Each structure stands twice: as C-alpha cells, then as structure tokens.
Image (cartoon, rainbow, N blue to C red; front, side, top):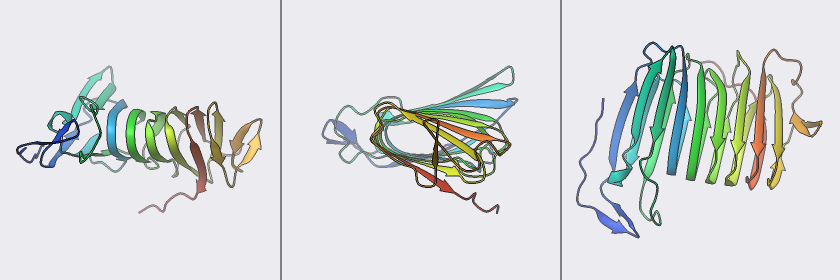
Length: 234
C-alpha cells in the first residue's frame, strides 16, 4: 500500500529543487522464495535497516525531492528472491534543505544476503534479529553503525569497504568474532578484543558453534569495534 502526500510547487535550494515532504509506506510479500538477496543503493540521506517485519519488507520513505522517489523491485526465480531498493538519481548539488530518509524492516525468518552501497549521510543497521548470512557494505561519507549483536544460528560474514568518516561495529560477546582490518584505515578502537595473527578476536572465538567474521577494507577514517551482550528476547 502506498500513501503519499501531494507535491506542491518546488523551490530551489542550491541546484536541488525541493518541495513539501512526501511520505510513503511500502510492503513486499516473500512469495515462493526460500532465501533472499537484497540490494540497497542510496546516494545521500539517512538509512535505517532492521528486522521485525511481518512481510519480507515493510518500509517507510520520506523525501522532499520529487525525482528521488525510491524504486522497489522484487522477483523470485528458483526459490531465490531478489529485492532491489534504489534512489533513482543522486544529488546534483549541495543538499541544502533536501531530506531523504529510508526506514527498512526485513523479515526475521528468511535467510538474507544484504548488499548495500551508500553515498553521503548516516546509516544505522540493527541486524541482530535477522537470519543474516552475508553483509556487503560499501560506505560513502558520514557515519555508519552496524549492530550484529544477538543470537546466531549460522555463521555470518560481513564486509565493510571504502568510505570516509566513522564506522561503529557492535559485535556479540558470546559468539565467536574475528575482525580483519587492512588498507587505508585510520584509528581502530577495539576495547575488549585481543590480537590473533593480525586480526581482532573476542574470547568466544574458536569456542562457539557459530562465528561472525568481519572484513574491513580501506578508506574508513575511524572504526570502533564494540562488544555487547545480546538484547533480551521480548
């Protein structure tokens, strides 16, 4: 279901014409898919990704640049779903008063591969409840928080590439964690971790049934690795 507010006469801030804020809510049914690969492409703005959706995807969008209306496509083939959420065009000038906000909530029950490509802005990923198998994140400029705490039934591989600014990765204490960081990275803060053959590992590494592996590659100005307990089950 799509509920949108009408666009009124646009004004120009810098080179980006803005109008009244539009809001939309969209949902995507899982269909016959047994697993899903989701791709997110955002040029600039604020992104939130979490679990808890009743369907494959429940999403809320807000924007005041008409040509930035998000595009959502979903297909299923051979039991594999492919979901793509993208910004049609990126900023063509200073953001000024432009607003662009996505709140994406995915089903916790379907195995999910998540690929994300970001431009400038802030991104907050709360992924502990998801049946996540892989995360491939290409950062832009700004601040990114990736929360991988929570109970895990399977191994998880996360890759964080490029970008400038600050990245915070929250990781579980009671699940084995290994973080490899290399190439062009500024400060690394890893309180509670120890070094193992050049990597950062926690006390549960090599002892738990599942492992969270994080590979950070180049371009991140500052990365904070945080160990946290799993949130309580509600």
